[in-house]
View 1 (cartoon, rainbow, N blue to C red):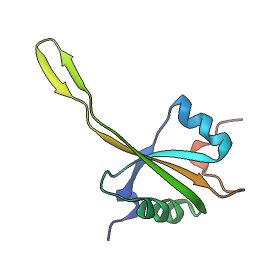
View 2: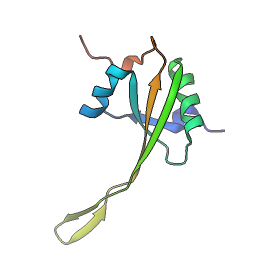
View 3: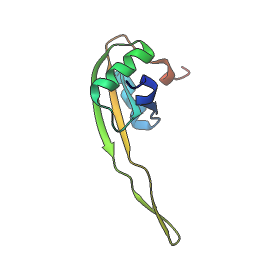
View 4: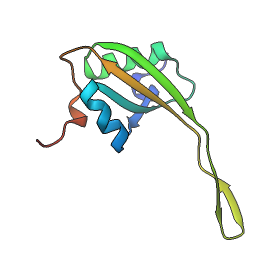
Length: 96
């Protein structure tokens, strides 16, 4: 059995993820082998909130050049988690 901390790596900090906070949606970088049910249970157990939906997306790695050397950035899997009304995760809260 995987630990919840092995499924969720870190929150995604971007303008688009902050815009989702108004709809009570949070974006996380997750383990590429995890499924929606595992992600839902991990978020609920770590932060003690109620999850209403989980949407996932895969971002393939890109080819990058640095001089003659060609490399690749790593592929990612992201989860957009929507919480129940009234629940929130404090790590995303701004200093307002």
